[in-house]
Structure formats: structure tokens, C-alpha cells
Length: 239
Image (tube, rainbow, N blue to C red; front, side, top):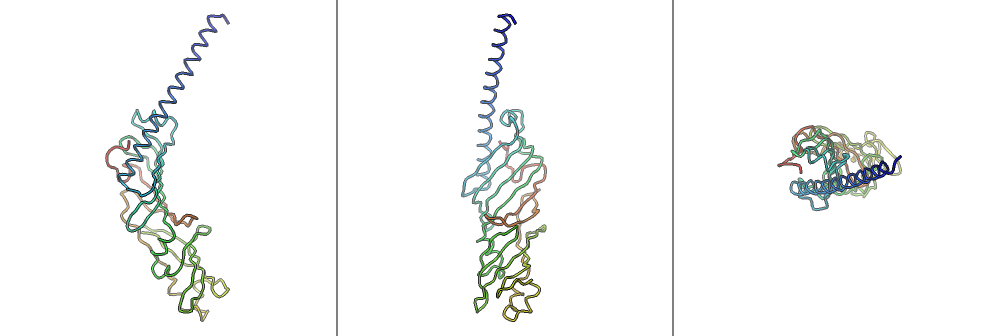
């Protein structure tokens, strides 16, 4: 290779490195500003009492916004107050545009167990809630004698909310199916209290549907699907 050709190659290589550096820096700057705008809109709409975090998951997401595409977006907001309930919300959207449309996605709202017990009425009265292997576990004492019990309940969802269905009870040193409680004289009155309880989930934005519920270490997690189209609760552009 001649000296001139080697010099030309070095110049081209340096130019390529400089271009890549500028492109990367520009992408990161625009991406950061886009994330800030998304987070700001979430704050305006949900008015959370805790922190909000937005992240873009598409390669070169920052530069894509210049062409009207945001790509994949994940947003989390803590301590959102809705219908006398405090939840932590995480939303994941695919193919978001700067006009606020998306290709759909999913969301999870996590409710603290102290709030779950209060929403269960007689079923949760005097009991504390926790999660174990995806099931809801209620523990405490019941009745005038202060009978210690541990109740394991399954979770299911419908179009209007989620249902807690007690399945087994640890009582008097025995694990008993709820349907067999009448056979225990000291626990015969407990069966009526342990009937399935449905908690309504209403006021969802258009295109959002409850799909499942499961118990986690942090709280009761409600999962939602989000249909393609305008982002739920959109007000103006997404960025």
C-alpha cells in the first residue's frame, strides 16, 4: 500500500470514528430528552406520589424520534392513587410514535397487601395478606375464640375484576379443604366467611383489559393488555 493510500485510509477511519461518536452522542441526547418528555406526561396524567421512570428499548431510539418513531417504551410510576387504592404501575408499549399511537402492549399494577385485605370485606377482616407461589395467603385469628388460621386462596380474573377463591385452611393443626370445614365443629362457621370474593376493577381506559392476577412478594399484581392504537389516556403527543 502506498503512503498516500495509507494516509487516505487513516483519514477515512478517523472520519468514521468521529461520525460514529457524533451519532451515538446525538442519539443518547435525543433519547434522554424523549424519556424526560414521556415521564413528564406520565406525571401530568397519573399524578403519582412516587418517582417516575421512562426508558426506550429500540436501537437508536433517540434518532428514530426525529422521524416520528419512538419505538418500544417502558414506563414505571410509583404510588399512583386511584379509586381509594395506591398502586405501582409499569406500562410496556410497542412501536410508539411521536403522535401517541402504539402497536399495543401490556401493563402491571401492583397493590400492597394491606390494601388487598381491606378490599376483601369479611374474608380479609382481621387477617393479613401475603403471596406464596402465586397464590394469596391470609393469616391471623378468627371467631370469638381467636382461632388461628392460615387460608390459601387462588386468583382468577373476569371482565369486571378479580376473584379470590379460598381453597384450603390450616386450622387446629390440620390442612383442610374449604369445602370440608363443616366436618370440624370448631370451624363449622368459618366456611361461610370463606366464600369467593370478587373485587371490582373499573374505570379502565379504552383498549385496556384485565388479563390475570397473581401474588408476588411486593403485593398483588394485576396484569392488563393494551390494544394497538392511541396510547391509553393520550392527551397530545407522546413526546
